[in-house]
Length: 156
Length: 255
View 1 (cartoon, chains in turn green, cyan):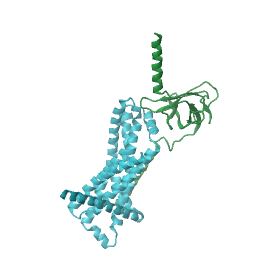
View 2 (cartoon, rainbow over the protein chains, first blue to last red):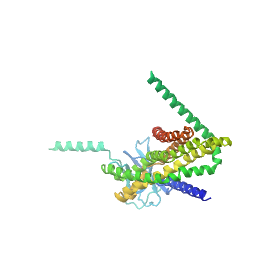
View 3 (cartoon, rainbow over the protein chains, first blue to last red):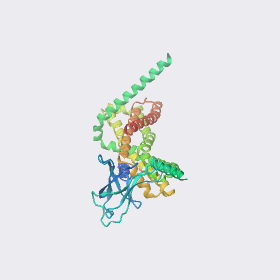
View 4 (cartoon, each protein chain N blue to C red):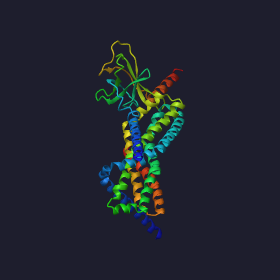
């Protein structure tokens, strides 16, 4: 009897630890699953999204307030329509805020930074952010730099 | 001439072993519902292979996490990207190191025990005695051990991985000063549910492979002291090689 009780206790402990570990892996290490918060969606149009991907963070003043839900190309205007999911608790964002695509560190992925505007009306579900700034593409930066450099030379 | 004959014989022997192992697996799968009726025996084997492997799995997972944390931090610091440490370590552990290292440890800790136990039962004629009493040793001895290993493996992998991430957290956050919020948020943005599913899938496949090799080698061992010893060695070797090959194939298929 003592023997079977130890076996049952040991197995129970093992299975409990295993399920706890699985629970931890599925909920804590991934950005999905439990802990999902109430969100509202807004869209923003960009000429160039650079390396932005779905599920990239949306930040305001450096604090993550939401995620990129999806990215699509508008077939008529030929620009990128980015759908943002923003946490319900941040529902006081002025509607003339600016969205820009930024890069975190050297290897870090792209994310969207929101700069607060001055309007008294705030963004609502389904609204569009009109002020946007596209991703900085390194090649175009370099070519612009070289171009201005040669113009300077001409002046001399 | 002799060389060619030897190569041919080795090939035939390999194919025969592969075939008989596949038939063995087929028999175990057919018997599986019967094994679940003997639930108590399966629980006993989950205890043997799972609970008793817990200490070595947790200790190894912790130190693998510590090493990954140190190496990852040192490497990422050269690119000024220590922030992705959490994500990098978690991805590596969840997709590769967790399932593979756990399977190798499982072969060494539980697989050898299974093979030598069954082999010794065979060498001491216990299996024949069961047959005499009209008890099928496949159902009474082999099947519960196989099922116990298959059930225990995903749990062991999950525990190994979780503790490994904790080890990396200790190095990265508690010692090297990576911001804890960044550590977790980078992990959550890098790791997707598909990665966790891949890890769980691998752990189930490896659990079947490691348990099958162990019980097969034990059951088909020569009923002598030497035969049991050889079966134990072969269990570790075959499990290690087949797990690494399976790992490559699953990774290539899911990528």
